[in-house]
Length: 173
Image 1 (cartoon, rainbow, N blue to C red):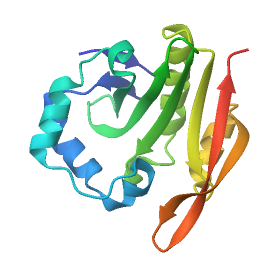
Image 2 (tube, rainbow, N blue to C red; image 1 turned 180 degrees about the horizontal axis):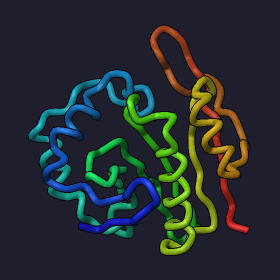
Image 3 (cartoon, helix red, strand yellow; image 1 turned 120 degrees about the vertical axis):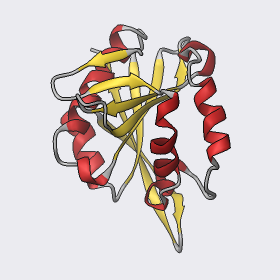
Image 4 (cartoon, rainbow, N blue to C red; image 1 turned 45 degrees about the horizontal axis):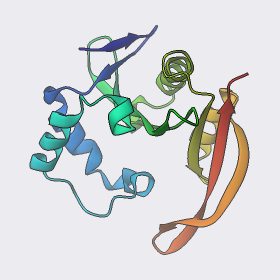
């Protein structure tokens, strides 16, 4: 199992044993807005996804880490996506289960993945897309020196309204 070790959490690869965690998280309607999901996933589809989760980020252009505590209990996920080695950039998204929020796990995971992306993927910049009403995520990313660089107006449809999406960037200095 590939693991990035932190002070209070680990970032690790998805494992077949994560099927139930993935199933409950991906099918939680609270998270559908940020994942652009409209229908539930079957365990079969998620099992197939797990079978291919080993793909290298250079091949798949994305990689999902499980954020786990030291007892290997999953507390969330952090994704790298739209990886572009030519232009040296990657997107980032983070999801923490509600009961694990406000415990410092998100901040530690973000710090670890920033270091990983700049050091091992040799990217020049990391970007994040955050709905304008997601104040927790905005505070988290701004705490880690991400800068607001633009707003996509009415970008996310959240029945019955539209929400703006804010684009954040962290450029390696």
